[in-house]
Length: 223
Image 1 (cartoon, rainbow, N blue to C red):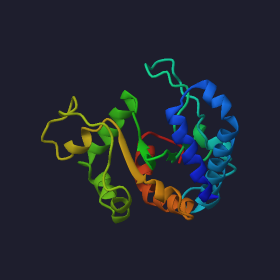
Image 2: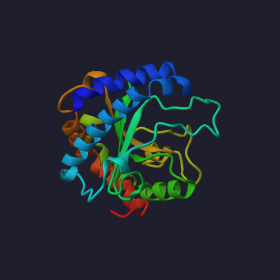
Image 3: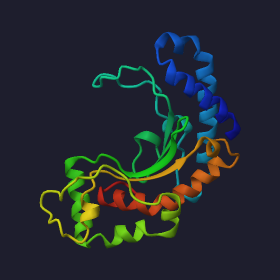
Image 4: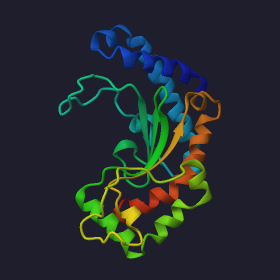
């Protein structure tokens, strides 16, 4: 039930300030309850998601990210994430096709979609597609009233200058400068605790579908 996410938010906030294995082990039952609440919430989303995408036989477990952090290549050696997240897509995290990211964190929850940190080859393909029609199709998606209502604009890392191969006066230069192409709908803690959170997220994902589909079509994903 969505209201149980209060327990999850409280646990994650404590974890943020006690991010050590001994504390985690001592509070394992709290973690298990917080995780169970989050899994129930993700299950509610999946149950309602047919109006956005056909998820087939996708299970909650397939969609969840582990709470353990990969600390091999980072200076931050905190062993655990201070958030819980799910990848809503047919086949879950390992699936293909259109997908939507749901992130629950005290003071930092959000829903997102798009092309995050594409590889150099993928970025080349995205920019070529945008340039081919001067960004008209993507701009049309970004100017859609539902997209603007829920996300406002496209986010993601942006170059300070024109990318190699494009002139600074290109009609779509503002789009071509992007290195990531992300749409984000932010949720405050009050939003997370509302009874209709799952249905709200489904509505947001409906608004994100044309944006998400644009990039997956370019990258040759199985739609």
